[in-house]
Each structure stands twice: as structure tokens, then as C-alpha cells.
Image (cartoon, rainbow, N blue to C red; front, side, top):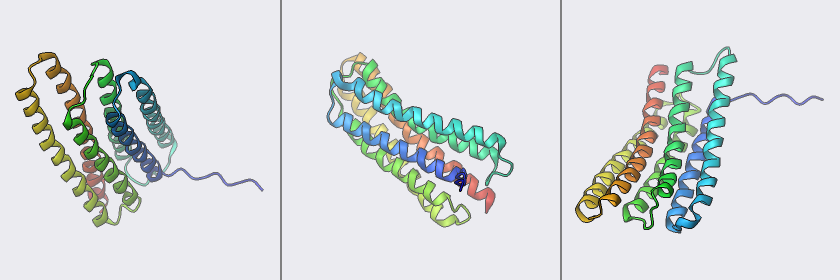
Length: 208
């Protein structure tokens, strides 16, 4: 008997994408905890593979959407959510790439704090997408959206602290430029998590 083809599910694919971002943020944490500039390209290769997986997931989603007669939510919302989710992975990838191309030799304390916060944020994004499968049940999704917004606000405070300390204590102008770029990447990753949450909130508002 021929096996029935498994039906494509946008919500399951979003969860897979969120899991990729969570895994990447954990890899970033390990790379920073055991920092070795000489081994960094190995870590970049691992995270870049996940980034390629995320790109493929969004590409496949877009291709399926083209021929989908009746998607569960608005087509534009499906595309935007996918792009927002992919942005998180791109920024995580960019953090490690910057460590490499900027030849960072020593990790600043705030980078460790950012990776912890990023793991919390990507974990919250994954949980939000798990609840998003039942987007008609608004309250559980709202709770996750609020949690992500709170984490992003913590990210803003950490960014301010990191930049203030950098410009106050660092005397080497080149180091200031390098770390400004890296802290910007971390903040962009946190902002991307919030943008996913905000887009999710817009979708449930349209469909409630």
C-alpha cells in the first residue's frame, strides 16, 4: 500500500526554524566560553551550516506557499514571519564571523552575558511558535510575546552598559571599533527576536 504523503505544515516549519536559532545560540555560547581564535573557523562552519538549513527551510516554505490554494493565515504574514525568523539566525552567524574577521583575541565580559540572554530569547521564540500552532488561543501566545519583549528590553540595557564601559575603559580606538560592531550584532539578534514576537502579535490580532 502506498504511504500517504505527509502534509506540509507551516507552523511545524516555524518551530524547526526556531529550534535552529536556539541551537545556534547555544553553539555561540560554547564558542565564547571556550574561545580560541585559531579554532574559530570550525565553529563558524558549524553555525553556518545551521544558517544554510534555516535558509533552505524558508526557501521551501516560500515555494510551497506559491502553490498553496488556502494557507492557514495571510500569505504576506507567512512570508514576513519566515523572514523575521531567518534574521535571528543571520545575526547569530554574523557575531561569530565578526569575531573572526576582526581578529578578536580576548572576549569581553558582556559578550558572555549577551549569549546567555540570546539563549533565553531564542528559547522563548521557540516556545511562542509551539503555541502559535493554535493561534486562535490568544492568551498563551500573548504571554510568550510579552516574555520576548521583556528579554529584548534587558538586551537594550545590556547594550547600553556594554557600550558605556567600552568607551569609558578601552583606550585603543581599534578595539572600540571592533567591539562596537560586535555589540551591534548582538543587539540586532535580540531585536530580531522581538520582531518575530511583534509579527506574531499582529497575526493573532488579525485573526482574533
